[in-house]
Image (cartoon, rainbow, N blue to C red; front, side):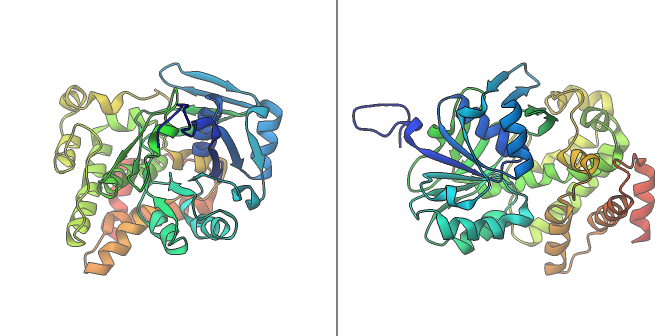
Length: 348
């Protein structure tokens, strides 16, 4: 496929793109595509649809980008029959809802549709492929965080470009628009595992109550994160998984970089701090909003992989247990000191 050329070649604006589960990532990506003239439908819950109809979409980021998308620039739907004419389906639901959305796609979408998951992790694409064996299903990795600001505003607070897997036809060019770069790589699974390691900090960040910048500037928190990475890397190795870094730092050296004294860490890994000063992890925003976090898809997966090969995962177990207590309390961000989490590890 090639983008935006005539002479009998399909134009990007002629392709029908459906965003399956328009939450924060879905609204941000779908909105940027629509702002460039793509034919976009958002399959969204009624609350999101009402918000967009009332305010349109305002898409911003920490580098100063700002796009305003009128509500009539895209289609909104609450029913899966919107898949009927889809050429590209971007799956952005929570991991726990993957099986449900896969069955909707199977019931309504043509088998020619290309199904791309923008959920991170490897379990979601496996779930989609299981239900959709005749479709071109591809994994995707979204490195940035998006924050819902209310009244149709979605703010990208960290950087990075989307990567999707390769397939029968090139798709990335159709999805690359101003403010959004998408590339295709054959090693997408290894990149997803690399991103999985980074996402292990999402729950730690929520438990800390700190911004990402403040958390990463605190060596005690970095030491806990490094130990968590070490635990996960050991489990991955035992499961013959080789994660690939999406940054300039090889995966194997990241625990060592995190353990550096703060002054040296800031000098060497300054790019890790090049994010919105108020940025927090998606789990932090879920807790503030009273939504269930994705800890089962992150630390929970480390525990399952560890059990499979007979390896203990005390740090992951601690994070899951403490998060369950915090969610039950329902008081938002718990603002726990790192020393308190260290003490909980020794109790497991």
